[in-house]
Length: 338
Image 1: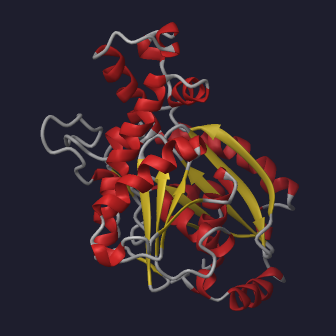
Image 2: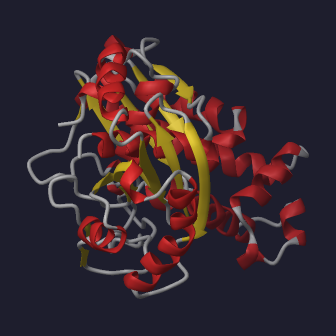
């Protein structure tokens, strides 16, 4: 296991320094539902160079990998070629650490089971390993970010979907099959819940992701005649950023949307606390940029739904890493073990 990297920083550095003499770089790759960001990482944890491509351009995963190769090889060549690289670490939705497969990811265009780590190794001639994208972000946060030094916390990623990485006693919770921690697909609304890409109804992801916020905007605008800046945008084109921009201009409907989102997420976080008793919950991803607009209703809702023994004890914080770097750095830890 590669967990040594996140628990004892001095051991991490010593191990990496030993590796550095032979192969001084790894690649960390964060595959999101919209964008794929990747970077060259050195033995000190510095992101030396970085680039990105769109994730959903092709329904054929081999064409996506070719796009990835065309862009990534530029960074590899600039760093001295493939011989300088220990491996490629990949954080991907529904990524299975044990098998190296992406399995039935609802927010990706490739369906079924994709042997992604194997395909990457064959394409690049560099060993590749894979884990869930939120697990990778959690490793990055524990090593370099707000959760540095913590051994029990939950990372919640709020992007195209809702992901999670659960750290218990300094180790990622994988479960027997590698898929533990799909908190975005726990049921937040049990009656008349929204249809999720996974096929279930009422998943947390359908309410508290960026796309969930856009869905809430459409529903709330359709249920009232109140004026709103959002009415100046075609209803099917509204994004979470549009809602944020309107809320920053004191738009009541936009603020109501964030309050609704925060209430649902806070209720779910209180449930998550009950099974792992974390020191902290770290929020990461595009939606977290809404700041107090989302944090205040989350905190109020979570605290009101916690058991008394946890009230006022659970830290709720935003990631203090750059949005892409946390997952890139976390995924890179996989590669040093290859």
